[in-house]
Image (cartoon, rainbow, N blue to C red; front, side):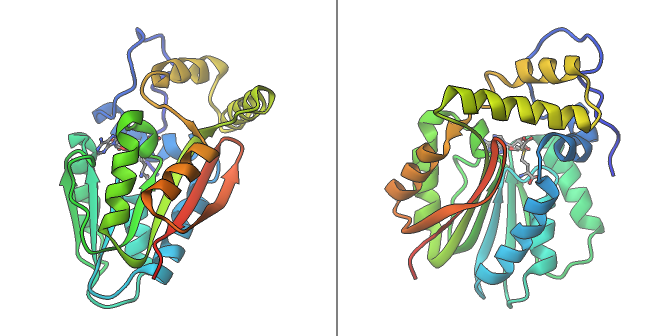
Length: 243
Ligand code: GEK
């Protein structure tokens, strides 16, 4: 486990959230204590990838951070001749992620690229993972990105898309935000830390509703898609390209 996340425990001046060295140093602790169900989602990404990875193809992890989803896929995929491609635009994340894979003994080749996923070609993919990454992309660029993923997937391939979401019903939206904050309190964050982090993420993380995500998947060309995991305002979806 990484160092404990206390980044918002002290009264730093307000700045928008960035994935820098300070965040990287505490990232596993931060994401596990902030995203309800994160460990389950990571484990099940491996289970889904084991089912959907096709021989001779690539499995992409877009916005890979420290490579948790890539590692889960590497441990679970059994088909021959697969390659895992992780991409992240934070140099600090990519440096640390490469170090983690240098120590890992899995046999599937893994490449970790430093770059913007909006510029990354997606080719010959059987599995594409965006685990809490699309929410950080400019909303205007999201349709094009999901379409690019659809085109780059082989027939029968799968997109796994996890996101923080919002709800159309204002009362439910407030309830789930509140429940998420209680979850964070149970994980040891103070109310002050929670509100400071919320302010730092406000302009950076733009959540959409589940219906917006579903419409985008449909528009991109996906035929089968649905939610396989949800806890409060955190959800993970699968979308399958027709065989
Ligand atoms: C996990 N998937 O542990 N291009 C590339 N990377 C980006 C971009 C972009 N345009 N925008 C943001 N990122 C991981 C967790 S974290 C989620 C993903 C979170 C990267 C950013 O640098 C960060 O590493 C990641 O997306 C989002 O399964 O922290 O809530």
